[in-house]
Length: 343
View (cartoon, rainbow, N blue to C red):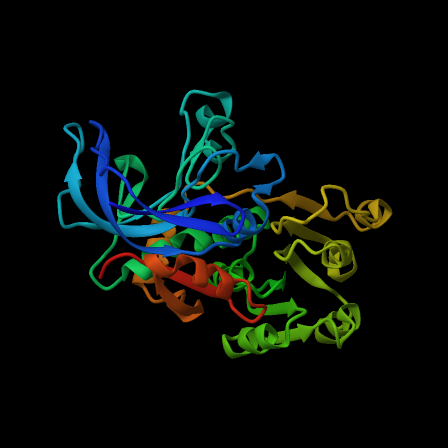
């Protein structure tokens, strides 16, 4: 089967690998669509993300969907021909985190495209059926693949307890920021402010329904938020860019008693933060790591037409052009690229 393998930074090799066989609890999926995530690009550029280092050849891609072609002996509920989205993290199910329901925090998780675990830039993947989600006829496999970033947005909004009538500020108009905007709307937010440093992305956020889109290279964000909220501030701020100035500014634009959710991964682990502001204004600050129990919700939102993820896709490339696709994905104005393996 055709497989794109990252040999070292900025070097893919197309290899012919044996097709896997499903285990008794697995489904074998013919992968159709895989999104190019920012983490994929980071591994491609730098060969590492924090402590996760690409030491051996690695198959990238964790936003995936396709068609079931074979099921394991113990699998009920799936049959060949079903189209599915694959949740890329499989936890151990035995540790304290898993047992209390926080399976996304499992320290023994097998997560696609995170060293040393291979991802989905390949024609076939055998994956536990418990982490496959059937797609209705009116949900495409492109949408199914993008259930993964949508799940990040859903989980971030849950961490921020976004509710009816809230004003939510989303910092960063990349894929995660834009799907967080959609998830916030679905959760009941009536006003969504989106920021970025790239003018094209600011315009795109406005086109997709942001009530206020702010280019922070041209406009003082605190002033813009004060004017929009009559000096109150945002109820919830979701930081999805990872940029140091953006992270530091979260406490300046959230209301007293509001909530800050940190999603974006910065280049630095330690960033100055005004603790006195957090204490004096009783601001809740939450980290948001991946997601849990979101895929069913994501599929339902897509089925009901509540969110639009296909509209985020700037381009599609075949697996053979994976190097060119990654070069294009690094362009500042690009939101989302997809690798297409089969129709």
